[in-house]
Length: 82
Length: 451
Image (cartoon, rainbow over all chains, first blue to last red):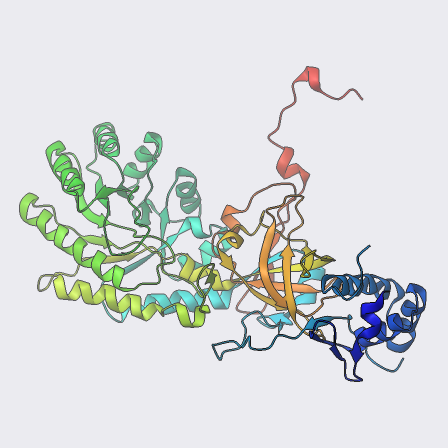
């Protein structure tokens, strides 16, 4: 997922600091889980599974929302585009 | 399962971007689970989505509020319902039961008022195009006709001869009341002397009784002072006519154009702040009358209010069908209702309410309609939490103009229901199906599909 993501400082409360740009962000618990897993290099299937297990999400909705979250990260330049 | 699922969102933090006004954002996620006590979900399960919902209680309340604002200040008032704002039978039936007469602008609206049991004498016939056949009917039935053009004067004289009656008429006047845009295309101009020419022309013909003056200065007028200027000018003209030609001006029709609590695009302040109360308009108009009328003379004051009465009685329930992330980072929603049935979306930012509590921070988003057309944008600056598919949104106020200006375009028009004062929900217009659209079509024999 690229260097940028691995350099982010992520707090337990969902506060995110990007040392490269100085920008900061907030995210919610589901977003936090996804970011952590992306940082660890986890893939789509593992993240969807975690969302369904930890939050009781429907698999289809979790997958749809994961795509949307990745689009948000791309819009902020935190992950590389396709 | 340890925690409640919430759609994942990430927001960039901005420092120094504080709102300079203290009131809450009008686009935050406001929750509305029912309308007049009827749950949103019950309405949708019975009548489908999208669904227009009107509240009888709100409609009557608003009508009385407007009526009282004027009748408490002036002894001789008539409220004439602007049919074009909403001519659904059930809606006009409520307004007529409150004592409203009918203000129509076409032969179609005239016919609709007549079939609702309104006699010609309780109809005001306005508009720049009145076909001569419709004038024959209006004159025979004693309707009040507000003349718009010199040609119409000639047409009415012809009808007067044919029918053997002296029609009671008024002229529509347009004028400078200090507002922009000035509606100069209707009626006769005041400042240029055109209105006076029309009076002279009517007097010369000798076949019509000029008994009224009419003006309608515009729409969604946020300046009550404009009505004071309008009323004063009309009273001055009325006395000049009486003094020089001996016509007694029995009514002064100041039109409508009073705003509703809707958020006009381009106006920064929310409607609660920007829109003056109806009492302020009533005060300006009646003060101008009482200050300028001669002692003992109280001509009938006619008001043609539409939007201010019905807009806030109407809601539209619509459903989130799909979500997409736009390249600029905003979220977009595809709804099942679009500009085909929400014509006023072009001019107003609606109040957007959600039918349930949705957790997650609000984010800027765009509400798109279901049409395969780029212009189909219901709201381009909503601020909502991440909505799951199937969430119902309640848009308001939508009671004015939408159910008359809606188009049959691509999709069927949805059902309209009325929540009665007794809490009962009645279907007042069925959802359309294909028969509504094809029933007047004809295919030449040679083009018919071979079966």
